[in-house]
Amino acid sequence: MENLSGPKWNKYNANRIVGEDHLGIRYVAIIIADYLQNGITSITPRARYWSFYTWVLHDFINNSQNRSLAEFKKYLKRQEWFYILANIAQLEGNGPVGLIGVTKGQEVWNTGLEELPERTDYLKNSLGGYGQAYRNVIKILGFTREADTEKGVEIDRITEEGKALAIAFENTIKHTDYYRNYRLSSDKIPRRVLKEYGDVAGLDRLNQPFSQDLYILKKHFMPDKTEDRLKILRCSSLEYYMYIIKNHGAECSKGLSGWRNIIYDKHSIKGQQYKKIPDIFDEVAKGWEIYHGRQLFTYGLEAIWSYVLDLLSIKPCLRSWLIENVIENLKNEGIDVNNRVEEILHLLPLDITDREEYIKKAANQYGSATERVYYPLLLMLDVYYRFKDRSDFNEMHKEFINLGEDYRISQKAWERTVEDNRKKQVKQLISHIIRYFILEQHQIVALDKLLTTNNETYHFIENEGILYFISSDRPRFNTFRTLQGVSILKDLGLI
Image: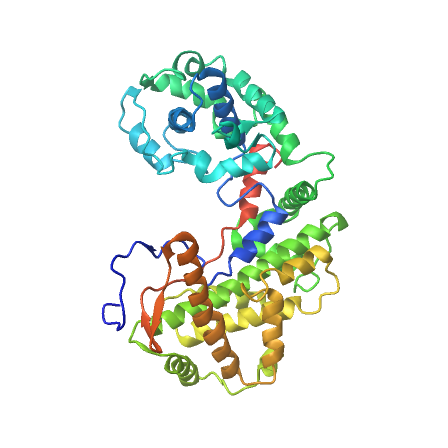
């Protein structure tokens, strides 16, 4: 970038290469997951945090004369830090899965000190894990609501449901030495006190007869009756996971690929291993099928993007040279890029084994153009094939297909692109993808991020028609929220 001609800023204040989704298309899958599993995100996998944070807010309000946000941050950090240590103590030095701040907590726990001091550096966020992960989802379940800053209230307000949950958690821990003698002090805390606290309050201890917050959490995560559309979908999704685990337990143990095989291949009428499922799961099953399809499309496009960046890293070049180089590499590897697109469509749907192999090879930094461009293209076309003209979709599913429109390359926008190019040569479709879905798309998204967040996420820059490399990238899937939903079900004792 130092060699670029033209004017330069006197001072550069933007943060460089911050965040992800550098083509701006992952967001579509996030919205779909938010809708199907409202209130459980990729970073909120433990049910008892809803109880703990609601209790901290309630306890602070009841015991603090100064209820400013600054004082709440101090109180929250102390409570959360010793909750981290209590969870580590409960598992004798091994923090449970999903424990926020576990790395720093284990470091301090392993010092062997008999009395452990307060630390605030376990997370950069001034509101700890509450601000980083759980604050919004606790609101979604109805336990808290926004602060009323116009009336001078700086901290989140607690609802009646939240008060009931906080009191239930408090009643669970009120006999502990920590609650009675240490929670409001500034003293160091003995290991034995934290062990006792963790034994009753730990994330892994929610599903115990003495846990008075368990019933309330069950009722809110999976209500018996509700007219709230998002709550109905969340409950249906969680029940769908329970059905899957009961009927496909061994497959689930394979992680993302196993779940994809179940939802995308066994529970879809377009899947190669289709088996009918109960009608009550039909809507959410199709919703998660679309989610998986979106993930595959995004992954395929990001794989091509990754290959293009690696080519660009060799030397600055014109767009035309870059595209021609990709096409030439494919030709040299035996790919007939002069074939018409419709001839490739006759190869679909992809065999499951081939699809999974293509996914693995697409992520190989040192892979060939075939593995990193042609195979990803097949993944993207397979998604087109899967969702084109689906008569079994309801209005919600159709909205998911249209989600993102042209700006974020919706499934419908991709379908139009394939239709417009199906009688053209494969090299013309690849050229279109690189020119519009990658080069122009990234520049639009990076400029938008720079203007709205002050983060510079450019992976290349264009000056007088020449592209200059800045940074590479790699394809990856969004965190699969179903696994977080399953974790919540385990905490609640439902699986």
